[in-house]
Amino acid sequence: MAGVSFDLTGRVALVTGASRGIGRALAEGLAAHGADIVAVGRSADRLGEVCAAVEALGRSAKVVEADVSDVTSIRDMQAAIAALDVIPDILVNNAGMEEVCASLDLEEDLWDRIVDTNLKGAFFVAQGFARPLIAAGRPGSIVNLGSLTSAVGVPTAVPYTSSKSGILGMTRALAAEWAAAGVRVNALGPGYFRTELTEAFYQNPDWQARMQAKIPMGRFGQLQDLVGATVFLASDASAYMTGQIIYVDGGYLASI
Image (cartoon, rainbow, N blue to C red; front, side, top):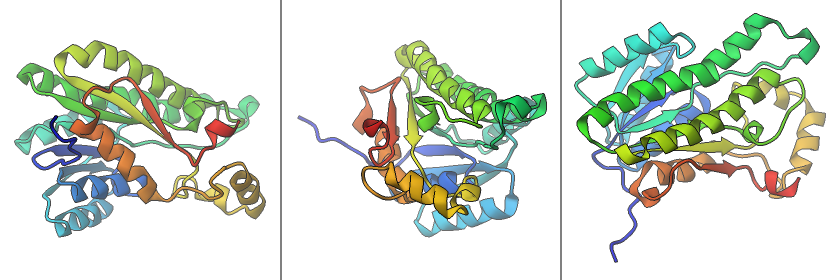
């Protein structure tokens, strides 16, 4: 029996939201396992830092500036990637935003900003990623970023919860549609990780104590904890897996 391979040598990974937090950690983690990287984000300076880190690992890195909440910007991103003369075969659909707000105070513009970034944008990025692969008859792997809120409701986070529940539904629907073409679609569900996006929560010591007490492993996640599952989903090690979500949460969901 052939060995299981987690090696990504010769692969090109497109990572959205790569300039910080989870996106940056996953871009560097994929590069450490052999992938070349196309880093997408809104900050050229920060993307440059990511590219330098990737190149220090011996892999190539390209930068494409884009705002995934805007479909026109996504189309421009796809044209820019085509101009690089590469066809990515891994997509980490990571770009996202969150802002808490009581449901009765929620305004349409906040709903649109969150859902357009987290769900609508993720779909159109995935569509643009899959088109050239399917046209060329080449396999590919998509890793969509879900959340604990893909499985549970969170007060004051209705748009975010809706978008991440939608990510799971989108993952399953695209997996079913694209499996015959060789494009696998799975999702990653991070638990509680401290990033710039979530920093406001961690400024509250009482919140930290309450949440950490709910995690069976007794600690919040570290960004490196997400790399192994992402490499698995991106690599041939998960070749017979599509339409699934892996929660990396220290046992949180198992305990509620």
